[in-house]
Length: 623
Image (tube, rainbow, N blue to C red; front, side, top):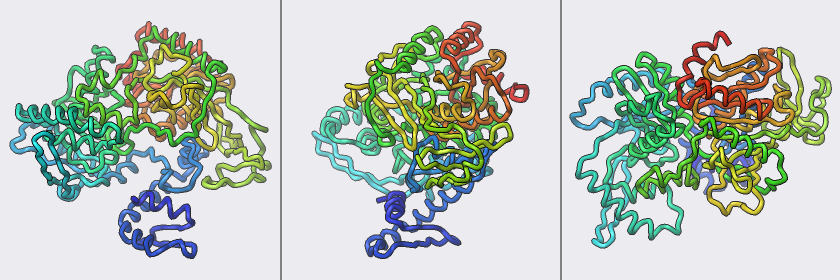
């Protein structure tokens, strides 16, 4: 049992733990703290102190109401569907990169002897300095690592060996290394390791669940990469600094080609993030496959707005255990049919490259197995999503008066100054729109979405369209008759974003979503001069948190609510920009959105990749 699990268990039993003047304090009902639990508390004291202090920092930084009257803590709870109070289950969102930095611990792996790439050496030292200046805790290799060993047993020759090495402790958020060239001897060892993995280990363990650590140890003992030294890859990201890939950042290279280049770069370096460096530029690559480029003199912006958010908020799929899973009949859903049609009509734009099978991009079986575990059983990945929000569902008055608000009941886990409920358990929020307090019912949100990895422009109604719901918690409805038998029936990484956009539109721009609304995302941007009257964009200055996080959902929610507070009316379309990722669009009408995106592509004012991002950023003040 780790510290988070212990804390969650004790909270459920009524035990309260808190930090006062650096000391761990416990208040417990009689009989709950047994000698065994007392011993566990003593053993886990340091971890519990760190966890409670982190929760305290996060809560304080997110409990202040924003411009629209809701705090980040409340927005986070609303869009994530968390109904429990346990800090182990729910962490308030942090969207300020400077606060993120203060919660990070990073180490740099020592350079190899006689390493001579001066550009990378200089950048590496500047990166250390910038991270420190923002409050990131930089630990030496000795401080960040501990000695551990694992056993290697080679079949046939019956060779057994116990290998000892210094491994990076699980609580370290990232290890930063350089790309290390492989010698002929290295490549021979890798070939042998992979053959043994395929012939023996995978066959022996194919009926068991293998962790990333297990697979990596069995298949990578002949390699020298930073990931090999990571104690827990689910907690510690590997970041590689290497020479910039001119082909990947070339705006003339088709995005479909960049997908293959990017995935193979991440797999080749065994890393979650790759930083490219040249004498003039910096690039950053992660699973979002952005081709973002920064000038060398923009390193402060690169570190604060791009790198720190990616370290603080790793890409992770939304696990099925977060949902109450059921079924629906897609043939009886008008919105499922609208979604299929939406995807088909967008095919001509080329904005939604077909998903790829991991087996087609990743050559080594062990690497495919590792990625498969990391992305929660997905056998393929696609870039972009299409979804269709259904009209919000209300029960009773959609808006109430201030006097009626005063008679409502508090809701556990929420501030009673921001959210309350009536006797029928319908929840209402107190928010600000155009400078005035309004009291709005929180509707039930439902939307249909393409499953992860599907071809967004050629969806099969029977098994490609899933239905997602947000009430007090999250719901996932799979096509009837399919169930969970198909491995690939998984929700998109961007579910939090879809739900956040839908909920924010219902609360702040109800005319936009009253009849349902199409929502799409692709890995590119519109040019500033593409926008027409009653079309707006937001989010250009946001920190570049990756997809698959509810922090990204919070930022999209804020984009819509902040536009509403600018007293903008008659919105036909909203573009919600995600730096280093792409753009989300929501419109009042599917045909209108399709026509606008087609026109943008035809006029070359909408393209995949980062070509048009600069024009949006340059015109923020004019918008």
